[in-house]
Image 1: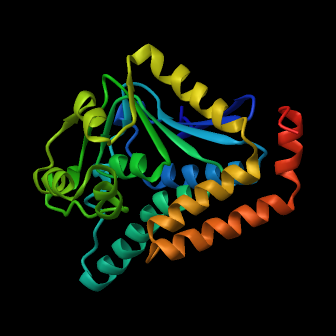
Image 2: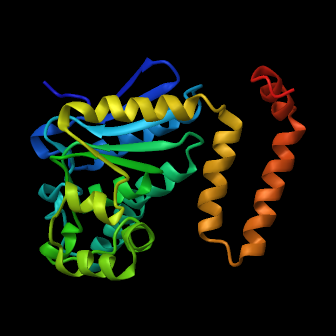
Length: 259
């Protein structure tokens, strides 16, 4: 019986959980799983959820690209190149669609996050992992490059240039303890405590309101690419003026007894 490659759990107030559901493949992405993941993001983006958690079923978070599809080539090299170009660009949207989602996304890394799984975790706004998690830039080990779905952009920003080069050029595994120490994740828990910790974080974020949370996420990502401090402050100023115009500041200040 075929199973859904991606499960969506919206039973938690204000928080939606996306669970990759190919445990027999350590939740590696094939074409159907990518399409199901995108469909889940589209649905959640239109929902009233205030925060999102991404995790994996079973003992893996995401083992990246399912290598059982690696032999899908034809005899015509031009047609093959065109096919793989389209496929690569489609897969790379795993990261850009996460960034475009209005809700903050928390990676709850329960196991191996390898290759595109590392990119998926990096594409989330926050990352927690269990003490069973491990990370690597896997494609360098199978004849490809480690520059894949945003890893070469996001990893140096998370751990620094030298550590990123070392991870990407060696493809070695980084365990949970090291991931926490170098800033790849901001918290490490035991296996049983991972989802409760992720839900607690998501619920804390959800308490702050949707519009101001969305503008904070959008502003953070935009200012990571800002050309100057002045440009970053200009964006911040506009965001604050926009929020002040909603009357939200006065309402919340009164509700909390400041006025």
